[in-house]
Length: 111
Image (cartoon, rainbow, N blue to C red; front, side, top):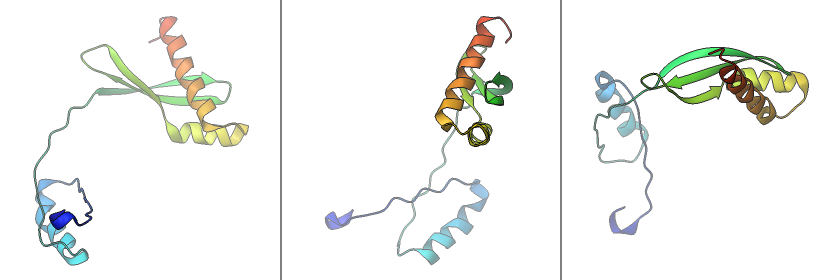
């Protein structure tokens, strides 16, 4: 920051209509003398949820696509966490099992 002092970057994502309210909060709760503001855009994938069967139970999987083709698949963390706790296995094991089950389903023509 100025004169090589350390600084902190605070980022706030909010509706533009709340900008004044949030600036007032930042001025009241921090030592800042200024707030920079700008609007940003966001590109999103189309989303749907599939459910897969694993050795650890049923897990919801979020499927993201763009213009048709699937771009990413992400097992729902809370489903995986609960299944992992119930079966006494690491969460990562359930996440990997759910992703693999979804891929198998696609290979078999289920999706």
